[in-house]
Image (cartoon, rainbow, N blue to C red; front, top):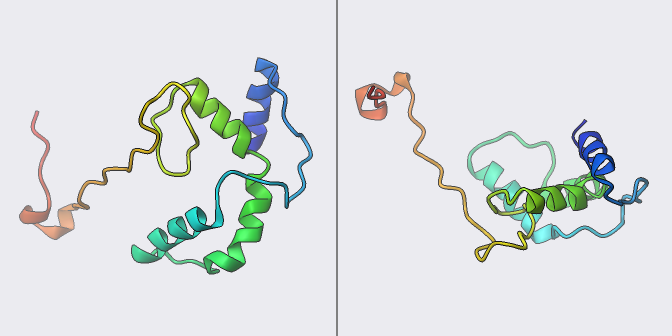
Length: 118
């Protein structure tokens, strides 16, 4: 439903887009960027079904349906730029890496968990 929603937003804004792209049509995201993202998942132990190379044609075939609209919408609302999120025409810095906090949970005991202060 994600790309369907983006298309409905685009229609309401009068944006033009290819409503029937071919799976092999070009996208901005590169295979190397995709492979880096897959490797991030592997590094944290996320179960994957395919390696980046075998997953790429399927990923690319779906992304072609929404990438241009997602990038355009992110630019329009000046969403914080992050890896794989497109260029922001009005921002000087174009890639802000996420700052992930340490994973803490009550199961780790007092050293691994900080109670919020009110």
